Image 1 (cartoon, rainbow, N blue to C red):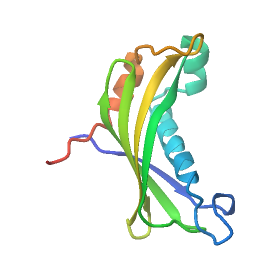
Image 2: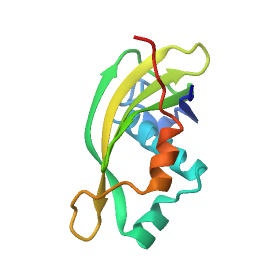
Image 3: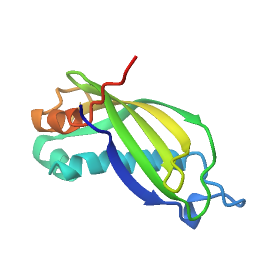
Image 4: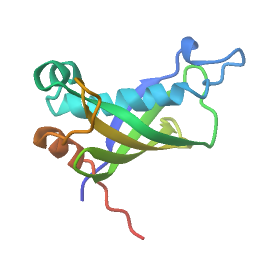
Length: 142
């Protein structure tokens, strides 16, 4: 069975509101960074993908359940699971947890689309990228 990808980060002052709580939109940034690192760790650099192949990923849809707040200086873990990889799309679930106690803070459901940069139309996900994503497909018990 494959394992989720794990990305570690920390909450900085710039991530918070006046009360020291992570501003809701910053969970999207944490998740984006984690997705970038999945590809980077597989040797795929998104800038090179854009330059060499003329393609890039765009978020087609995302929904977020905010469960508990993260606060200034919290160490966080973003666990990323690939649910499905289609021809031009990939679906995933990303869970943001507090590292100290494993508490679930936010859960994101993300659909990515692979697009041709020239015209913005969907295009097939390259095999190397498909393989990198497939390494994090996690089969959960029903």
